[in-house]
Amino acid sequence: MPSKSLEMQVLKRGRQRKRQVDLAEDATVQDILAKLAQLSGAPRSGLFVAEHRNAAKVRLFAGEAPVGNFEVGGLESVEELPEVIHVQPLGAGR
Image 1 (tube, rainbow, N blue to C red):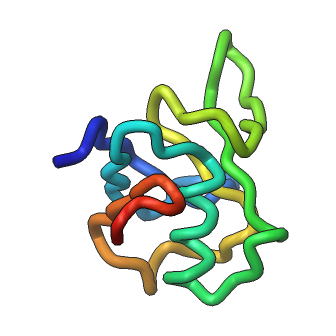
Image 2: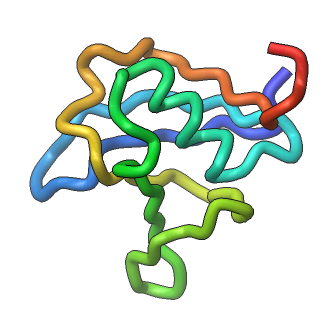
């Protein structure tokens, strides 16, 4: 069962399609990026997560976890990704 369900979209101007991300307890940006790289085939090193905090869009560090809906840089679209993406902490049974 997910600890929290968030919406994700690519970091681009304009309206973008969204995907639901179910984060397990203790899952971080590092885990999200690893899962997205696995699903999309994009290099993990080219991906990042950003979200709005205190009226500004900020890039999150690998050890942080998003607190709300977020955007991913480095992907062209989420079209090829599943509607719901389940993210477990690295090293957890997958």
